[in-house]
Length: 259
Image (tube, rainbow, N blue to C red; front, top):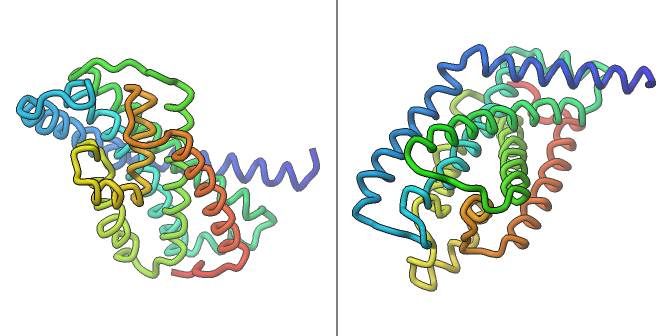
């Protein structure tokens, strides 16, 4: 192994280790709150409201919303981990040392993204385990389930990185989650099937990327979906590639690296 490869390998391991240690060290802030929030969703929407709604898509309402709630937790936590961590590095000026080091921009980006993906998956696993106390789930298609959750966590980790690059203060890192991410998630078919909507709004809903992610994951778990799985996965692959190239270009240019 060449010196350059060894340097980047050590740097990658260091960044990932730091990111994982960071969210594990403050687990009452990173892992516990989303678990409590999802339990409340299970109780209020799944049990109380679900009894009034009845079946949806051939499943109980609780079974129907669980995949969407798992995906919601993965999205918010993978995004939040990267945006807060990278902006924190900018704010503390530690990112400048990393930028002038002999470490590839690809290594820096992959390290932060892996940290976000691992936190998203960790919370997703916790929420999945908690859901077992409320309903029974059987994985319909393991391959689709794994691919979709990994691509979704990667996409939102990359989006978190973009947000962190352009953020100038701590208020800026909350604008996108509040005014963009949350509405898209709640309107992304987490709590309902778009077949319940009028034809016009069904068409409009298809423009929501979160809808494709949630429905693809629901297909992997339950075997039902409102959209084409092949189209959704293709979209996620293309989005991942485009966002990755954009993030690398931002790192190479050094744009927005000062808070």
